[in-house]
Image (tube, rainbow, N blue to C red; front, side, top):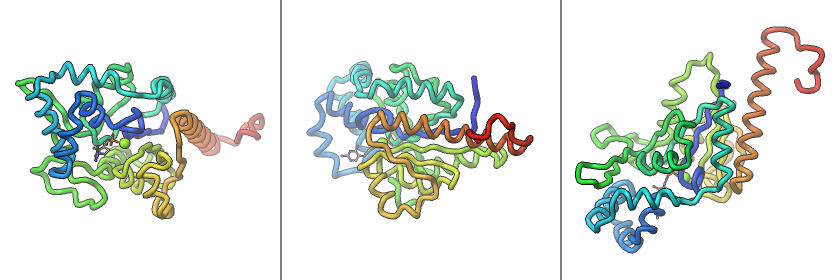
Length: 263
Ligand SMILES: Cc1ncc(C[n+]2csc(CCOP(=O)(O)O)c2C)c(N)n1
Ligand SMILES: [Mg+2]
């Protein structure tokens, strides 16, 4: 497979799929009223764990949840677009405030689980009683992350920093980050000048970025719908690849005379 120096980091809900997976499961299984009643009383991450308990106690099985997840709305072009980015050698990752069970079930159902090298999200697992448990990404026995932009269970900015630090400077990785929610703002601030952020237009991360664009070092390319997301992502991958090959030529030999227009 081709390899490149491009790392594409996707948020999941409303960036890869066309809904919030948590709300989709709760609504489709008929538990919206209870969700709305409990919503003001506890942090969201705990609420999802509680809702999974409520489903279990009311006779909803893991198979029922899986069946609902298989029907999750997604723009059909998203699947070939992800496969294409992977085939071009991009390192694709997910950073999401959903959970591993929902995300892995959905990606496997669409046949794209293997396109991603890493999924960073809240752990979700089925316990011995057949109940789905959802835990915080940052364990409660660890010191709090101290970021005041992010919910206590997950700071996506810390995750981006960890991914950035996993590469050496010589690898010169270029990041493209796609997201929609307020939780995607913190990681956007941590990107560098050579990187790109693709906020979903008219969604919370876009509103936050637009308040003061100068706080974001990365180049900003907004997207309004999935067709546009696919087009811009493809253009950015091409743009970075061209820049890198131009750099490669200029570092190794004089530019070949036959290529003056491209380079
Ligand atoms: C009414 C209401 N208030 C708050 C929330 C919390 N919340 C908003 S988007 C999201 C998913 C993030 O996943 P991703 O990071 O993949 O976009 C979560 C956990 C909600 N779902 N509903
Ligand atoms: Mg999202």
